[in-house]
Image (cartoon, rainbow, N blue to C red):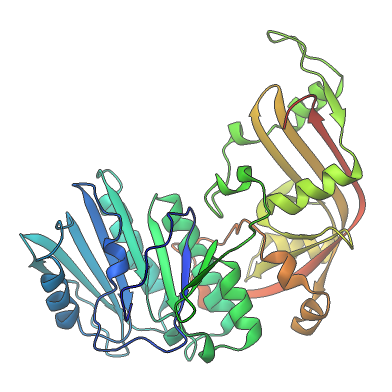
Length: 387
């Protein structure tokens, strides 16, 4: 960051800093990664396109003279003059510093660098703080939507690993649609020039914010179909009466709007279902989704046979505290112009960001298309007297 900003209140979820005036290239290090690091054990990572490994190392050395040293540190430099070897040195009081040089046109290479760090640190104690700097430097090399999906999966994966992530972006280098897409990935948006903070989806229930964006739930997180059938009967003998009730249209609209993440089931044999992000327009009662296509994609194969789908969105805390909504309908593809005309981007900004796996598939070989799910029926049930 160019200047020290007034500290904002601690907030969950990733933060995006809008740097309208640009980042001072003489500032090699983002100091935000050292904020609120009172723990004796912590690790920092910076991704940057503007500095050499040596300049970041020197800046980090200077910074560590004033603060508690991290246990380990890493810098991922995106440069067209990338070298394959990883550089290792020390900063501060014998803190290991790992340096990765990756070409900006190699999103998979950036993902692999993160994967190596996550794997190395997964059993270690302490917080990991990550700065994604110079996001706009990727745009000349990739389509905007590809960068968007890349950031989507990076944020989801790093948060799923317990990391505290923030990013910097110069908004004047992106058009309005691109800026809106990038902003939708972050729970908090800070305008550095205005020193203000916007909280994405501030009206959403706290239950949504307790989950890491894009992290699929476990079996315990959502009621299974068989469990829902038992509940729909009115009671269940497992230590007491666990009555259920139908959800009203208003309850289902509010629930679908607040969640943004579910399981999409396609027609055909054998059954096929995938976790999916969605945005819900409660006024029009339609859902918007962004799906990847690639050679051999099962989703695309199923849609070519039939556009009929079912979306299951559920929330489960315990046997007497759950909700579940099923949306049956058909999906159709939308052009970029159609998704803008239907204001689908605003609805999709609330989604929980289920994503492709960037660590096993080359994003350069993927296409992404917008879809709308037009419901033929929406049904829901909930436990009585809770949630």
